Image (cartoon, rainbow, N blue to C red; front, side, top):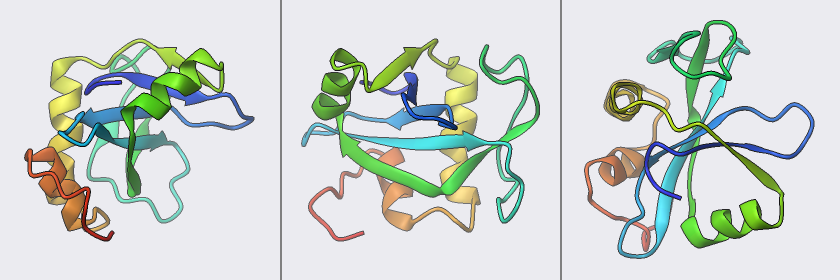
Length: 125
C-alpha cells in the first residue's frame, strides 16, 4: 500500500479508507476513513461526490479514527480478500486530506508528523 490507495474492509458497513502517507522506513502507512455519519465528526475536510467513485454523497474525513498500520499486512489482507482495493484518490484530494491533519483538532500530532515525513513509529500514540 502507498499514499493515495483506497480500500474497503470486507465487513458490513465498512467505510472507504484512504492511505494518506507512507510507507515510512519502518514499512508503516497512515490511513484514515471517510464517513457520512455527521455525529461528532469535524468538518475539516469534506469529500464530495466526484472526489472518488465510491462517494455518493457529502462525506468527511474522520481524523479522530486515523491510524498507522503495516503496509505489508494491508497488502496481505488484500491477497486474503479481507480488504478490497478501490480506485486511488487524485493527487488533489490526497493533498487536501493530508493538509487536514494540521487543521483538525481531532488529529493526533504524531499523525501530522507522519504526513510531514517525520516517522514516529517507534513512539507511543
